[in-house]
View (cartoon, rainbow, N blue to C red):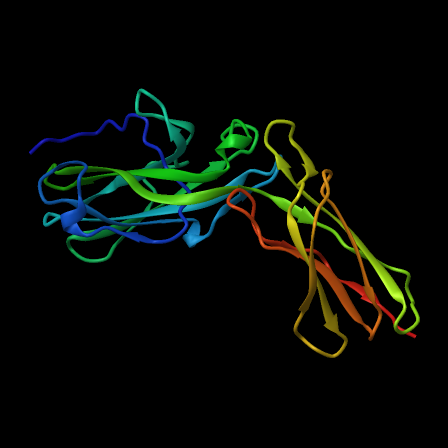
Length: 262
């Protein structure tokens, strides 16, 4: 059997979800009966990056072979947009190539690897927000090898922030309330938060003593990410803005602003 130990430019992605690969769907570089059957990134959640905080996450790779999987020889990498040489922009690899491996059976092993993504190094620019790709590699005890690319896909998103302020407060019943806020998101080129323009944001209200927010209206942010609208004061309760997210930024709700109606 061929025995391959080099891993040139493996790319990993933050996984959106668990990916199970049918045996008959394999079309990657491999030798023998070894298979990579499942890859889970960040517990199935998106990777959300701000402007300076390093994000720690995991990629778990499950592989199977009739001879068993060689301990510490199952690993992933992650990246965005393939380069001509087969590597990826923003290449991210595990801190410890061995990972933490657990034998599921005599033939199957799952190795969980810890990776770190730095918003000032790996994204490179704002165009890399969105889908990233994982490449995974495994070696069996009998020398079989498997390289799967892509092994999974996931989202790497620009963090968003949302504020709210309702005024005046207190306010007389049925009087007009003005609710302002700002939607901003991380810029991976300037390392600051800038306004997210022309985005739909829902104004929501939760009456005091209840547990559910109800959407009153949807308005769009202006060119600087500012949102402003008015509504009537009908009861004591909490106002907030809610943003549903996009393909490059996550959903987010502002903190609540309580209004006392006299």
